[in-house]
Amino acid sequence: MQASNPDFEKLCDDSDSTLSDAMETVFLMNTEDAYMIWRHISIPLSYKYDLSYMIDDILNLIEQLQKEMCGTKYISWLPDTFRSDWKVEWKNGKLIIYAEWYNITGGLEKILNKDNCLQMNIDDFLKEWKKILETIYYSLKQCNYTENQIYNMKRLFFQLNNIQEYGTLYTK
Image (cartoon, rainbow, N blue to C red; front, side, top):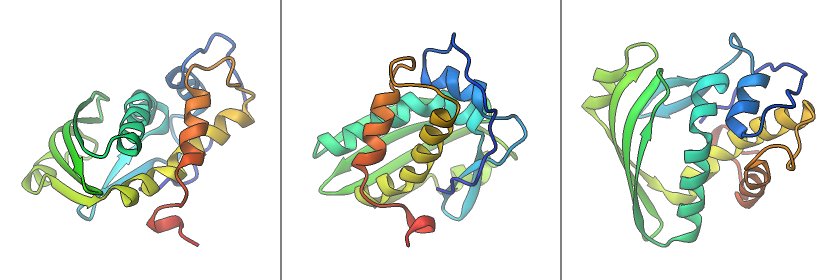
């Protein structure tokens, strides 16, 4: 995962109550995207729309991977520009994702569906999300959102701190 350096509005909407709402308010439409690298293919993820729609499922998956030694999870990613279904299986420290790609920015569905299985260590998968979670959390904090105002912001902070190391691009 590549977090990039998205620009964001320095404002807080008092009516926002969820991470998704706050992310849509804060992140600009035309700013840097995050990128998911799937078998050497870069998939852009907008902070404003893609990641804001996905954030609760991302946190759920991260928590399950940390708490359960083995399991299976089905996720339907619903953003218009990252529409895919994932079957995630894990055990013995290994993770396998079987993905069906339907609507991806840049029309990448056919190439992604040619090789739609990804395997990696669970710890490596978790590390890849740390910088994304950090970017989201600190952007919201700089806009004066609080854990009391935004449902799951405390959970986001906990997961951010629970992942000990950064992914490949951010290892020092």
